[in-house]
Length: 333
Image 1 (cartoon, rainbow, N blue to C red):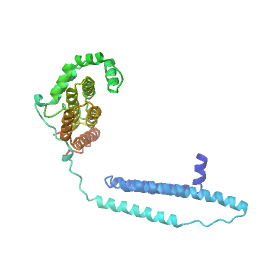
Image 2: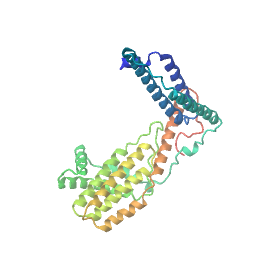
Image 3: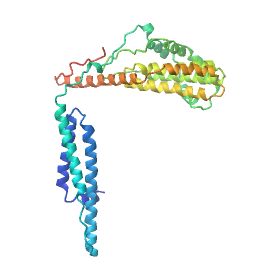
Image 4: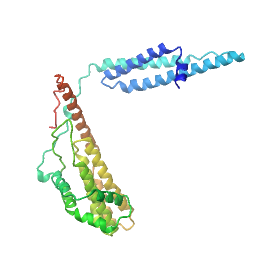
């Protein structure tokens, strides 16, 4: 491959060097245009690189054909220069657009940043779902082997009924506290002690609690208790929705969506069950209509990531005694 690369670039090294400098300059202009110019400069660069590669490949092939033609006494056909002319026109047209965009963007005021800081809600401990979820985590009684058994049970593998019943019975207090948390108005996690490295150790235990809730729903459904199974399915949906609704990090939002998917999977299994009563399915339908929206949680999570990024930039610049971004809070309002 190296020999082939040398063959197709032979005689064009300086031209390629100048070409790459032009491409680099265009992309630098794209970055200087507040990054917006990259939407035009990157596709232009990719098209230019592809065109140059095709041209070099074509010239190498023509050189090979020329040598073969001279050997067999054939005449060389003149090369078509229209493609080169068209490429030059569009290449310099895009370059002019990038330069014009750079000059136009130089007068644009920096964006308002206060709207990019998510508002933090302050509620009492009694109204905060986190209070009861924290107690549910403390009451969680699951060994590593039992966690594996629960995962296998959720996948549809055969597990003895008494084993599942025993696990659910030992964790009845934890599940009860989780249901109590769903009656609260909101889920507000504690403030981060270090804004540069937000730590949320409670997310993994929440997954174990949700798996237990689904295992209980499957257990009741297989036992013919469709009313309890539907109630557990509804609790699963509320749990995932509550976690993703007001996230403090992007990870929390993604975990909330994953927990919500567990509830939706159990809902699908319940709907596919031919013995499930229509009135129980109607209850789930009403809950689904009241859930969401899901985009607001994502917007809040992205705002939180923005704050973390700015805090890191401030931290690195403070170490050099060059404070900037002074108009942005280091935490939430």
